[in-house]
Amino acid sequence: MMGANSASGQNRLMLTIDAIQRYSAVAAFIQATLPPKSSILDVGGGTGHLQEYLPNHRCIVADLRQPPKDSGVIATGAHLPFEDDCFDVSLSLDTLEHIPPPARLPFLSELSRVAKRTVLLTAPFDTPGVDSAERIADSNYELHYGKPHPWLHEHLCHERPKLAETLEAFAPFPVEVQAIGNLSLWLRLQLLDIELDSMPDGLRLAGEIDQLYREHLCGKDYLLPCYRQLLAVRLDDSSESSFENCMGEPNETDMSDALHHFELGLHTLLGAHRNNGTALSPDMRLLENYRLAISDWEKAYTNALKLAEEGHKWHAELYSRRSIQILRWCLKLLGRDL
Image (cartoon, rainbow, N blue to C red; front, side, top):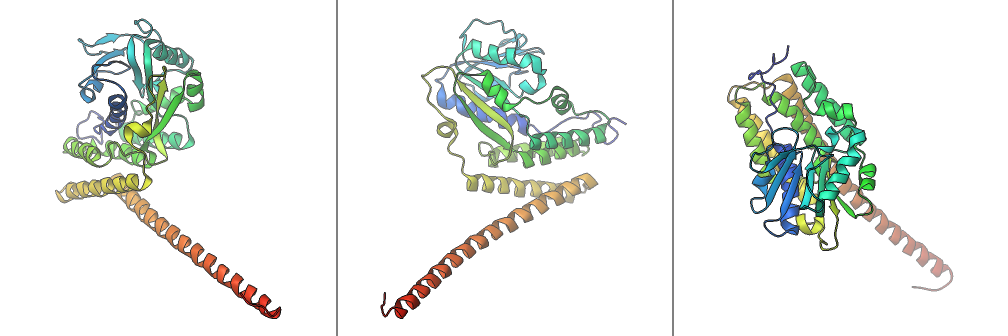
């Protein structure tokens, strides 16, 4: 059964938007707060993609798998082979949720120990919305391939970390929190990613969707509710930078417009794919219908809010006029005038 619906037979996840999202957010913060050639430790960083986003800094990877030969060490995050305050920044991106709960506190302690300025951490924390979205994506993956999702299922087995407990682990240091990655969009892209592997030119289409995200949403994908949180732990007093200073103050209108443009571009790409003779599967058509319904609902809701606001204004004005009229009548009875 595995791979029965897959043209490649490899059950690949093709979209890299998740990685683009977290790497670009972290890179923006580092470039705004640190001088060039600063030292950065990426714990759980795999093959070292962060260096591509930070070419003017020195990135070292600590990972249990195969880190880069020239800039990595094989190590567990709970026992890092480095001295105290060895790096300007230590960071870990979407790794905490893959660690069993008893090992998380030592992991966070090591991140703080080896950094002298800042700790950066991203993770999908435990909320009802994230739980529902991950369960939907995991069950759809298993329905297609006959096996659990390669990393979402591990989130469910280990239990996602809780934000309050993570913040407490970094006490007494101040921590800023920035939500990134609209949750509704994240789920739609996860379901789409499963479909892409069933398409003959799915890899090409995935590359185009990734590029579309870079053009329209990279650095703007903060519309709540979000899938993951980015934590910045300030370990010294020399850095007073905030997410607002580094990334700009999130503007809900701008974020909504960016999301809308991405959705339009995605619809165009999928439409062109359909016109090239590749029929969309029932799940893909359901996904498109879901997207269109959400879009229509959002427009209707926005219009309803505008009408309600205008109604409140008219009501206030009429109430004011009526109050003045009643006052005139009362004064007239007393033989007076305004």
